[in-house]
Image 1: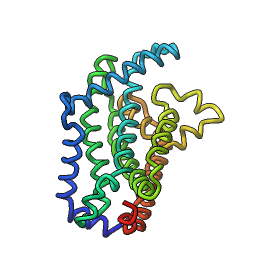
Image 2 (image 1 turned 45 degrees about the horizontal axis):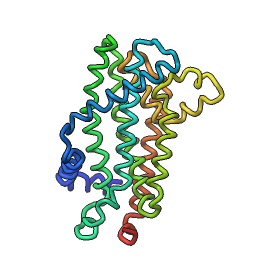
Image 3 (image 1 turned 30 degrees about the vertical axis):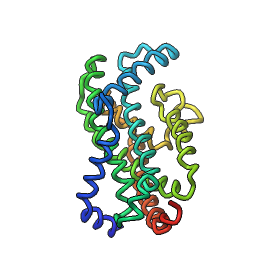
Length: 258
């Protein structure tokens, strides 16, 4: 782990270039460019509010803000982990020719998606104005939520990229699992009925839901359960440690499977 940290500072300029490259490639030949990062969550939220607001007969004025908070966090986690999972295979040509610490590739893919995610948070201002939701002193909860979702995505991404080199089907399996995670994260429904039932574990032991709830608490103005902080922090740290260990042990064998 110490060697990884030293290598990170040694190759930080390369990491910056990889992050810039990722952003440029993502919006290459796109007329809207990075503006789409603002338009897409708004359009998605409108559809979800119309469908699920009608389905559940929900008249809560903060429901659009509730949905977009969960949608933004989930979208970053989904995009970041999917990009990281194919980072080694995508850069196989470079890996075979030049020595670069291999962990820089999945890390840069997570980071450039994180930058785009941070820019997309601007839409929260528009939705908050629409719902007439003023910020409260509890907005500080957004900071730990943003840190935790980054740590979680890096940890899961490091584990997935290793598996994906040896098991190509992992890319498709993860897409299915992401759909399951979405439904288990209370993005477009209120969690009270589940939390008060025998299926409370579905949410309580889902670190992404815990992070989403922390973030929502900061935006909407309620104090999230301390369990969410502790559990998501421990899970994220363990994910990074295990993901790094697995990656380090298997990285020398990557070249044989690319």
